Length: 216
Length: 190
Image (cartoon, rainbow over all chains, first blue to last red; front, side, top):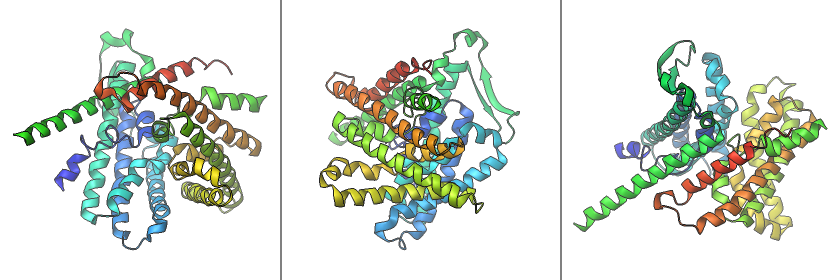
């Protein structure tokens, strides 16, 4: 089970290794605030959708499983959207339409189809949290690079009270050398490309090590 | 004139793929050959136009009078999923050759975020019926344009020598970044 959980981070990282949920990963990663907010929302939806679908897996007829999954996911996303709107309005503003587009995030439907429909409740819950945290981890990596290059610093504000900054720094010497392009689409695609290449390299190294270990 | 500038803006300036990062999964999945890119583009255009009109009427005829706006997301995604299923069955029955050309792309469209985005956008921007029609045609045309252009680039990329870990998606992402840079040059037109 621990292996399932760990898989979501590097080897099967949903964003960098499986290329799922790319749309939101690129669109939302302009700032650390958005990345963490979105990551938490997706993790919550993923956890509950995995649990619910795993509970119902013996009741759902095979032919209509996809519509059933979609309705479950859409209801969960609606609930999360309303909660965020009520308690973290600043986050709701900056996530915008992408919060409701979590419904069509391939990670959630993918995990429902590939894992929760075949495994027990506890394993599905662990898988949901692992994958969700892997997604959050990927978002944090991309957004940290982009925010740093675009503004010369990194800030994380309390999502329930945007005035209060929990953590952050900025380097004054870099103020004149920021690259505003990094907060736009170009920066998103480029940063993502670098990380994807890095993960491909890590994966290949791990595979090679395994091969050598087997030879011995 | 207003509608024309809206259409131009949706196709070139606010292109869904390159400025709003939508529909990227099929963008990277299907764009390996220009033939399948055209097929996917046509299927997406058809589904978006149909689904947007249906959701538009559903929202203003059923949801708003009954004060059920909060059901928007669930209704829309159900409409899209069943519309895609219906189109698939319809095409299968009436045109075997069209089904052969578009068939494999249709199930993929349900999870294409552009469809849900356009349906939602028409409502949040408070477009009237005519504007909705124009918007839901222009956005997928922009999508198709970028998909076809990009697939031509990828055909070249496949045969070029790239470092091992950059092969496949990473180098395609770099190409997409350069394309976004080129498209950002069009921003002043409208």
